[in-house]
Image 1 (cartoon, one colour):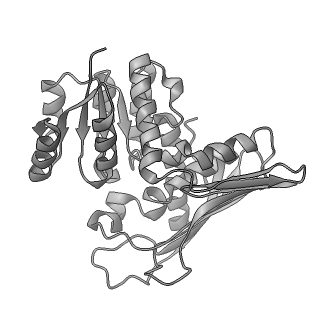
Image 2 (cartoon, rainbow, N blue to C red; image 1 turned 90 degrees about the vertical axis):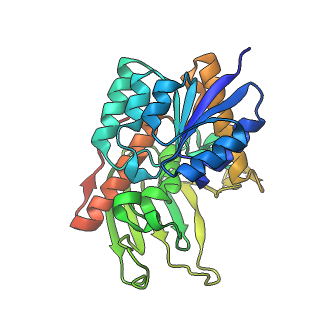
Length: 332
């Protein structure tokens, strides 16, 4: 079996776990890397003996790639995924998939026209805790979903700018939003409010300090997502997890574990399930296996689902601005 040649568009911090996992994987070669920061591209290219580019279109023209990872910040995606889909190149894209739903729609139309393997980096879905909770919830009617990403400020300059990150709910808490959909089903509308003013000392900061987003699910269930980036080291001020409840049962998971119980006596937990890198590795292996087998069903978070999660978070942003209930645009 010949090696798969994999390319990377963006080789910053978010790409590193993927690069390391693929490098350790048999039958896979990191053959080309691209980054607009030439020094970074050169460093990673030398590390993995890969061809180096600063323009991804030049890379796609010059290289014969079996798959491409897209690890760039939300606000600069442009037509990257559309170009990959048009060329029939399988792609794995880090979350969130974009900041423009119309651009996502064009990608989805191209995938429908000429199917191509695609995956999105919602790695929590691949964790043992989330998978165990998902199995426990099968056949149960969910009444309420309670999600939190209350934590500290992310120092990356782009993260504090709406035009580049979309804000904390879109970029960071998107993992909790995605699990809310994964466990509770699709959300038809949202009502969100946000607060600002606590971070005025931070240059170029224009995202919300904290927000509450109320969720109305198709099923009739309700829920909320709480976000905050103001913890600043204060003890007990961070909380990142999700709880799902229905009559006679509840389940809970965070990034590396889970627990669940019911009035029928069904009770168990996963402790210290998997690290961030291990969960990402599960997604990487699923993507590589899908390329080899031509089987999209092995992937638990695809581009269409990733677009739906983006649609929910962008609807929440719209509600924060308008003060009105906003219907979530549908892609699934």
